[in-house]
Length: 80
Image 1 (cartoon, rainbow, N blue to C red):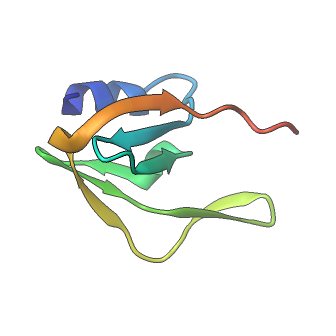
Image 2 (cartoon, rainbow, N blue to C red):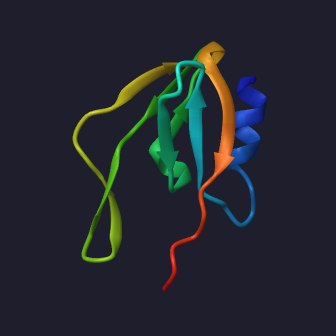
Image 3 (cartoon, rainbow, N blue to C red):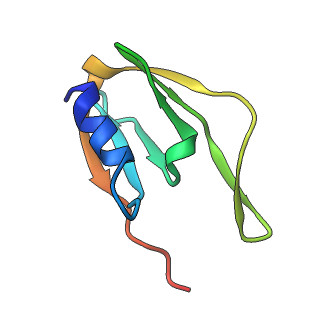
C-alpha cells in the first residue's frame, strides 16, 4: 500500500467510507475524508463520533505508518 493508494481512496467522487486495516489486524474507519491526513510516510487518523446525526471529530488522533497498512476495505453504508 502506498500514500498514492490512500490519496486516491480519499479523493473518490463521491467519497465512499473505508477502513484502514493494518498488518496486525487493527482497523481504523475513515467515514469522511477530512478525518485522515496523509504525510510522506505516516497517516494521521482522527476518531469520529456521531452527535445528533452529524459526524464530528472526537478527542485525540492516531499516527499510523503507511508501511503497516495491509488493505483499505469499504465500509457498508448505514441504512437510513
